[in-house]
Image (cartoon, rainbow, N blue to C red):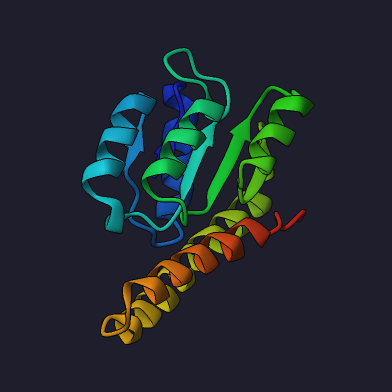
Amino acid sequence: MIVDDEPAVLTLMKDLAEAQNLEVHSFLDPVKALEALAVHKADFSAILTDIRMPILDGIEFIQRARQMQFDLPIVVVSGHLDQSLTIDALKMGAFDFIAKPFDLDRFENIVQQAVSNGDEIRKLFAEIERQFSKESPDKIELLKKTRQVLLNMRKPSGS
């Protein structure tokens, strides 16, 4: 999923991600993106979002997306070098940050890492949940808490 209120930037990011053989759903409107996430949670491996958007800013978008699906890697993309917003996004669990205009190699690397990370985490926890499915509700709750802790421990790549 890619969310950016600038049509030209959104198209560029979509084209770059599709060049990596990724299926991309792109949104100019972050509210529409959240609606799609709510309905099709399993269809997304990662989110790339602009930090500054007029309808809903990136920080609020990240908060709402995390409430729906807290395990998706979220990459923040911004042309505004607002250090405090970037730090806030990273504290909220953003996977990494890409500055606009972005270096194409860095963009491709981070997108691939985010998608791979998201896919791997979901497969791992699906298998664990399958194995725990016959266990007690307390164990399932412990698994969910462990999942959240592990996800919060992820660090941005810094690359």
